[in-house]
Length: 93
Figure 1: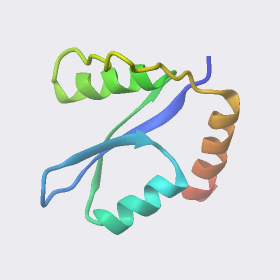
Figure 2: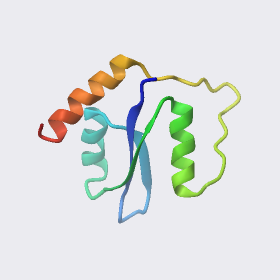
Figure 3: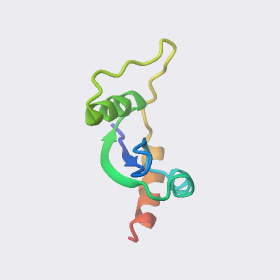
Figure 4: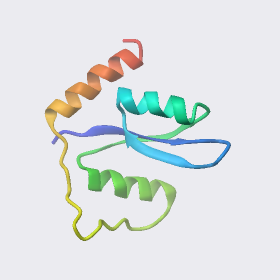
């Protein structure tokens, strides 16, 4: 089953955190909005629901519950391939 890499970043000034899949656009926005952010944790997830729960687990917030009309999105092989290409560039490979 395809799994995307997610990262949790924290801004040391505001102590706010952000969790998202690794993407070029996400990195660009974080650099503009919170340039001092520091990477705190990374993990892989097969769906948005799994990622939300793993974020809650890492923060110690307990059980994450989706909204009543929430839909679980399973990630695709294409999304993983796009992310891997970006990661190769980001990591200088």
